[in-house]
Image 1 (cartoon, protein in one colour):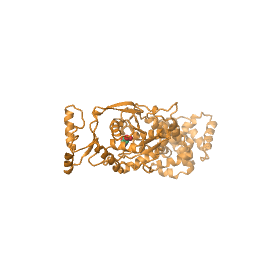
Image 2 (cartoon, rainbow, N blue to C red; image 1 turned 120 degrees about the vertical axis):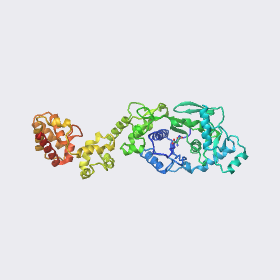
Image 3 (cartoon, rainbow, N blue to C red; image 1 turned 90 degrees about the horizontal axis):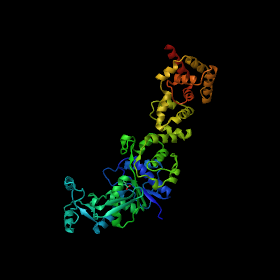
Image 4 (tube, rainbow, N blue to C red; image 1 turned 30 degrees about the horizontal axis):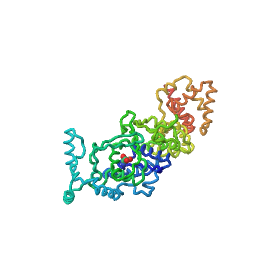
Length: 483
Ligand code: GLU
């Protein structure tokens, strides 16, 4: 059997969208599972909308996600070039062949004419396709029009009354009637081939065995099948993967939050978590666990486990997965990852003054609370913001034993460098005063931080240091007494 070879073929007309990333991922997983290879091909034939900055962003996003390719930009390969605008000569040879064999023809109809035609057939309720006006121009008519400088398009002559079947690995057999297609353009009047033409030439010449792509291209596939047939190329296998919907079951869009991969990176999602999450959009692993490493996913990935129903993008699930991935990191791993997210924190100055030890304590304190790396900025704020008492905290502070607890803690606190020592001090206050743990922990927390919840208190104390901790206790005591 031929070795599996897949391709991801983005158009660089925008950043890499979550849907595109999922297509790239499924190609990658399938190839990796089958010990095959992947090609990255840049489909930049839309000259107005294609931008090299998008190409760079797409490549950056794919690499960040760990989706590497064996052939393509940055890697090379024997089937290049891998940018469609650099392959125009190649397409031309095939266009010439189809023209010579009368399987394609020049069309001189102008956009306004075609629009008028569409309007009329639309009003009559007829099928909207090309009328076939230029289908049978004579050589002389063609030469005359060329002479006048009219730039033609090239249309593919669609055979009439045929039924085409796309044998899809995800969707099963899907039928299309050629009579509904109309002769379609394969080369635009500027000489650039259309997607439906170039994609076939490229997939054939690059030896692609499996075309795995978004469902929206299923309706393009019959047009591509006809080109395969006309040029005598063997068909690859097709797999059209379902749409991704937002949680309201509408097509995923900006309304549903971040749609580009780089936005997720900027918000502090981990590539492993996003990889894991995207793999579950339309594919189900065996067994219960959904937290899987890339190699576990590769091991299990099969196209017959890919669902044809739309996948729902559940942000809560992504957040949960991401927090699980963050929890698995060590403080050593986390530290350099968090630093970039503190760059524009309002407490940057205070954070910069922390010793390495204090900074690591801060990370340790908030580690389990991070949903994404970006959260470090808000979490760190709790350590540096001024003391304000929220209502619940103030109620706790107004209980009778509180001043006594605070005084005792202050008197006993002699070192803040060691978290265990601080814990021991708190325990001593509990024991000496014959109180319940919560009657000491809660007042201390409220007195020191002004809130009833948050990371473990000893970490705060250690980061503040002795002086600031005492100052906070005194401040709270004064406020209680004033009251
Ligand atoms: N350039 C197309 C797109 O970005 C690729 C379609 C395909 O994979 O055939 O949608």
